[in-house]
Length: 309
Ligand code: DON
Image 1 (cartoon, rainbow, N blue to C red):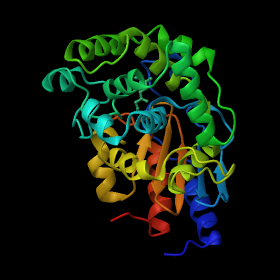
Image 2 (cartoon, helix red, strand yellow):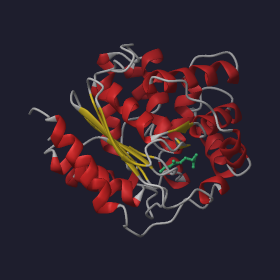
Image 3 (cartoon, rainbow, N blue to C red):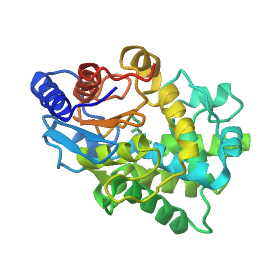
Image 4 (cartoon, rainbow, N blue to C red):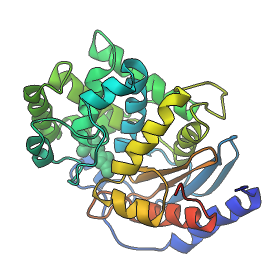
């Protein structure tokens, strides 16, 4: 399949205009900062594996990366501990439960099952090498920046809002500790996980981060290798199984691309070797996925005939 640049440009623009006035969904309410973001913001981007950018709407607005951060910390942990150890210690199955499910953890002997739910993401952070929380945090920030091709920073405002309300995640971290799947101090892992969710990205950044995955681990903007090519299939497999939470099966069936969502309103989908599609709109459905960004990303994928199946 050859992707024609004018076709990508048209697909992005049409998806934006078709869904710009869609209603439905609600900003995440459990993190005060997210509840306060303008719900009308909407941006759609695509970036090819060789770095060509296509965009429409609010693609320069900085929003909280949230759960999409799980993909990049997973990439780094895989890199550092190896795929086999990572799978054994964190897991590689869909949970079938919401992203913050305690029940899933408890049903599986206090283990996380997937690195792309909150439990697995904290377990993943606990595997990242570093003597202190700051060492781990610096590594994560560098990895996010390397994937984006620019310096990504923490928002103190988002982080303060999350750290003062993340009691549910703290409970999950202790459950994992009791199950032997928390590999550092649980509150340190929860703190660093909360920070990794609180960095700011634009839809353009998200497209570049995805294009680095589509380009098999080389950021097309900087030319830097950001993750081993050998780990890309496992990353994409994890995204397929759990990237859209309990809607992952539905997304795979309808859209056919590995994806990842965040409660900040971002959605990222990858066509390996070809293209990344990114969308941003704050109002979420009941699963926690952006209503408009899901529709727009799905429409771009369909218009271009993209599917990994
Ligand atoms: O841990 C949390 O609940 C948030 N910091 C991130 C969750 C998230 O983005 C789930 N996504 N759809």
